[in-house]
Length: 430
Image 1 (cartoon, one colour):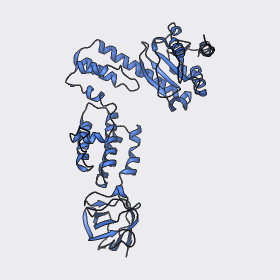
Image 2 (tube, one colour; image 1 turned 90 degrees about the vertical axis):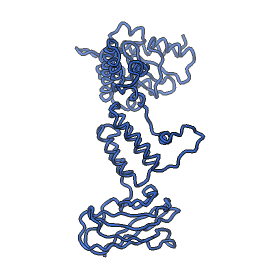
Image 3 (cartoon, one colour; image 1 turned 180 degrees about the vertical axis):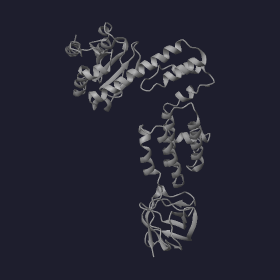
Image 4 (cartoon, one colour; image 1 turned 30 degrees about the vertical axis):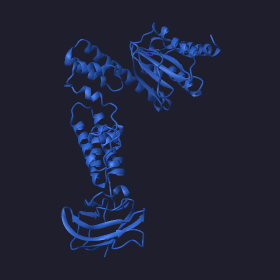
């Protein structure tokens, strides 16, 4: 046996001699290889600690530390720990050596190393922990993740066992429930099985499982136009195809087949579509989808991002920040100026649009002021906010005769205005 292989095997064997936590509670044991693991209690399966061998000097040390840790051992219950070296450019002798260690578990890859690979007692890989979850986590932070994965495995295995005793649609439901267990990946052929058992998808699991990786792309919008041929011209980015895409997403949201996590993904993709292909007239829809995204799970990553989405993309044209290309409409739809407006007393107000940058001037048709829903004053005339020589009639006068308690200020831009423009809005009371 080659020296580096002998050294690695010796290190793995040494791990098996480490004293384990004593007490009534079950604790994981360490085995040098799969063969040795067969004589150990393993109702909670196998945890393979995969570390980079020879190309990351910290990876192996971290795995060894975690495998020895009493908190980790206790969290893993009656499972068996096996250390697995991962060679960056493994030669045949190295691959053979690793195969001897993992046995029937097989050599598996992870997105990054070190990683913890979770196997059922029957050798099925069902979960992986890697990246920051392993590298940065303290044992007391990693332990609950391990417990959750093992608990999910038992829940899933129980559903799969029930499915073995069932037939038809009932079996399809049990398999679908097993596939949805959070924290445990289901057997790879489970969707095929459900399709065979429920060809009309009456349970909804087929369409639900087929959209696990749903991600918005521009093709999603183009597909709604029936354009499958890549050689055909794609439609212009406008409210037409965007609205059809949103209609499609709304149907997905209304379908009871999908989980709340999937619905959050649909909302996120709707927000992305509006941000990329819509304009300021759609910002209210961004808030609507963000609110829905939060409602489907306020404590999830997407749920917690809803407020940030609304703040960054859902506010539109604001008094404090002025206008920018993405806050300008593509038509003459009146756009409300968001933010706290300095309008309350009666008198004359001067609304001025001051260009600050961009290659285009901003053309304006007029402004209107409402007190809640009641019209108060308006000034409709053509004006241009641009470089000082190009600016003309860019101040609008509103004569307000009574106090305004709930001011709403709307701007009507020229339908043909160019969008490469930024500027500020000033409001002065006389």
